[in-house]
Image 1 (cartoon, rainbow, N blue to C red):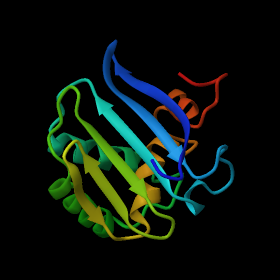
Image 2 (image 1 turned 90 degrees about the vertical axis):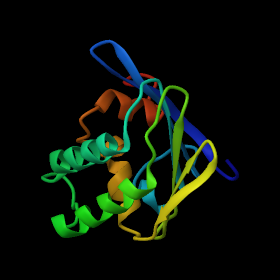
Image 3 (image 1 turned 135 degrees about the horizontal axis):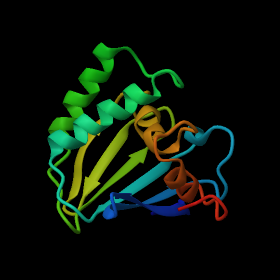
Image 4 (image 1 turned 90 degrees about the horizontal axis):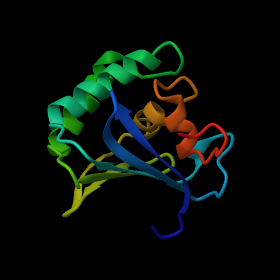
Length: 155
């Protein structure tokens, strides 16, 4: 990805089943402070089939889990985001990927194997979405550490 450096990679497994591999890129070699003051990309490569409805449902659940620790916008706004995302995200299967590129104070673009899937033009969406993986209170701290390039704590 032009102008972006790989920060780290990791995997998500559930009961021993590998669900996906993830990789995080950013403009800075080392992330610190405000991650979202720069262009950030997250690529998720799936090893299991997951339908778009489940992707939306898991996103909603993760935001609810983070609600006490970050400023997720009100439910009306997040439900509008989820409706938009549900119309963009495809059902995925083994070998498929979704690449998310978040522009600082700008849009969030989603890409799949065939190119651009769609855009969410609300500047608050991208940081809220990537916080699922990158917030210190994420439900997957080992994956967060791996994505941020922490070799000691990473998965």
